[in-house]
Every structure is written in C-alpha cells, then in structure tokens.
Picture 1 (tube, rainbow, N blue to C red):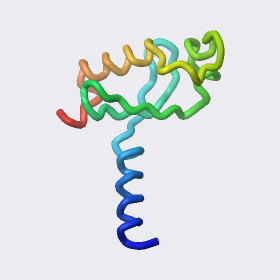
Picture 2 (picture 1 turned 90 degrees about the vertical axis):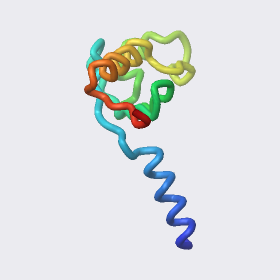
Picture 3 (picture 1 turned 180 degrees about the horizontal axis):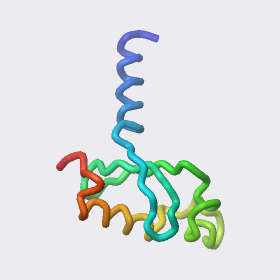
Picture 4 (picture 1 turned 180 degrees about the vertical axis):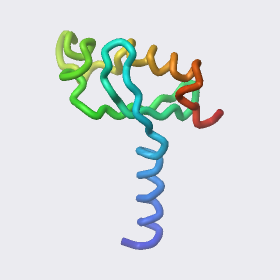
Length: 91
C-alpha cells in the first residue's frame, strides 16, 4: 500500500469511527455508538443486532433493515445533545 493509500485509509477510518461514543437509549437501554457530526447529521453504529435489542426494530413489519432508525433512539440522542452530555462536532 502506498503512502497516499495509507493516508486515505486512515482518513476514512477516522471519519467512520472517530469520535463515536457509547449512548444508551433512554427508552429501551440499547447501547449504540454515536457521533453528532452536526445538528442534522448523526452517525450511529449498532453494537448488537437492532432487532435483538430494540423493541421498535423487533416489532417492525417486514425486514428491520428497511427501517431508517428508531425514533425513540433519535429522541434519546437529541435529549443528550440538548443536555450537553453528547457534543456536536461542528459546535
């Protein structure tokens, strides 16, 4: 791998996983990794299979992969941002 390829790989890895921190959903307790890149952009990385731990995904009609996100988790993340326990990267 060239130096440029290594740098690109490192940049991509940092973008995808850098700044992720654990967040426990206040509704069901499911733990995910979260990064708020901006007020509008939230990166979520599930640490478990969503349908196994999140009641919203478990109760989904059809494949849970078709769900964009859990609204209760989104509310929980929003609450954490408003309370200052989860920072927004762009301030």
